[in-house]
Amino acid sequence: MIYRLPAEVYLKIAAGEVIERPLSVVKELVENSIDAAAKKVEVELLGGGKKLIKVKDDGSGFPIGEIELAFERHCTSKIKSLQDLDSVSTLGFRGEALSSVIEVADLRVCSSDNERGEGISVLFENRSAIERKTVSMPRGTVIEVYNLFKQFPVRLKFLKSDQYETRLITEFLASFFLFHFSKAVSLKTEKKIILDYQQAGNICERIYQVFGQEVFRQLVPVEFSKDGWQVSGMVSAVNKGFLRKDLQYFAVNGRLVKDRLLFGITKNILQQYIEKSQNAAVIISIIAPAGEVDANIHPQKLEIRFRDTQKLFSVLRQALLSALGISEYRSSYACSGSSNVAQKNLWLEKDAEINSRTNPESNSQPLLIGLQEEFAEHSFRVLGQYQNSYIVAEKDGNLLIVDQHNAHERILFERFKKRKKESAITSVRTLLPIVIQLSAAEITHLEGKRTEIEELGFELELFSAGTLSIKSYPDFLTIDTVREIFLELLQTDFTDQEQLWHSFLSTAACRQAVKANTVLSLSEQEEILKNLFVLDNYQLCPHRRPIVVETTLQEIEKKLKRR
Ligand code: ADP
Ligand code: MG
Image (cartoon, rainbow, N blue to C red):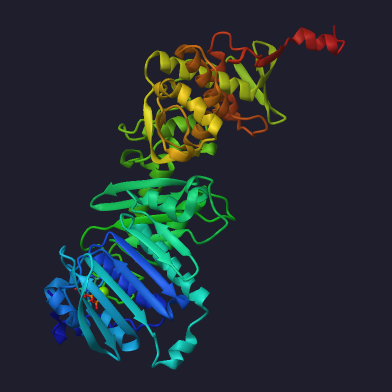
């Protein structure tokens, strides 16, 4: 039902937004589509919206007898009284968007509220309905707005190029639908399809659709709730800042906001974990308990007021730090993702700390821990790194030069082997499938050994045209190495499963071990040696290459002609 609001209600509501440019129209129409529970919204522009703005949805449709009423000022189906004002959950509720649009443009609405294919089309010109006819259409609404500002030459003159107006609309749709990830949306112009996002299952998937793989890989998921607050989305992982500055998006209670306080707080928290010259990405949706956010009826709704900013700060801090895997708030950690919290610079012990903090339901396992403190008393002393590739140490009176990559590889290999033996390896489900385009040769390889490969802990789906999606992978792989290791696996020849496991574990160890030419801190060097020396026959890597060059004092003294 569409009601006409009584004056005391609409006067309470902050003054309506004027239609300034095509973007304003698109915003209002798209919000209405979402309020009508549409699953899919299609936007089309001609001349940057100056010639035509068309928004099509598959929502509930207008109540058929009341279309004209909906276009009158202060008519809405969303609130009736002052009491309702505080509890509105829809995006629009002032009941004046449509009337504002027909004040400045001509408009045709076609809408159907039933499954029988019966719809109504109404044409508005110069603010009044001049034609009404029945049409046959599926449930939903199509609104076409044209001749925008035909009677407002000044406003028309203020509009920029078609391209510019289109860009504003594109940016709006991308950011708005980040948080309405379960809706499909597309935008097309006379020239091309500018965006086309399918329905996504969660915000991370939508972030992937909007920003692409390059950005997505640098982010970690945020999933946090406490005391009725919920924070979800993604932020820059440790040390994964961006040169671009436009990756900050916030929604509060489902509304997109451009709020300086939120921007400031999150920047303050995240900036310490990325380089000074870079910017942290933060794309989060905040659900605050009732009463914490000012029941906001300001028309632009871009800035909001939080009742308790201290609380907001503390919630965001906990949410973001736990997403980054920073230990401060151990107990509230809730990770929805997999092992992609592991950061390069939190390597080794930190890794362990992070992994042990992940939610018990998540399958990620520590990479290097478990290789514990057996070696309580070090029988060695690290002297430093040579060429950023070798660890130089003193042990039992001898001088050791240890190949850091080979040593770490051996440690990882032994650890994976042990877990395999104990049947302790599980599979991790990816947040988003890892998609690989296979060549014809690779498809043949895969077909020949798919069962064996799946037995290692992979869950695969092969689509036509050679697209492979990896949905789960063994937990000892880090997410960024899965693709590479998998492709290597395809090239592996083997005679039995045992042999396949062996080469799989050794490839995984090799790919995940620290590389040569990597600066290591003293404690990282110590950690490697400590874990290396507890292994039997630690001098050899899994490929039987030596790991350590050992020189005795006598040999050195001999060279120095001291003996
Ligand atoms: P408000 O959104 O504030 O209620 P509007 O002027 O934007 O005011 O819309 C008036 C009314 O028209 C809405 O309350 C709703 O009942 C109806 N309406 C508008 N757009 C749609 C749509 N796409 N699908 C179904 N109903 C719609
Ligand atoms: Mg509205």
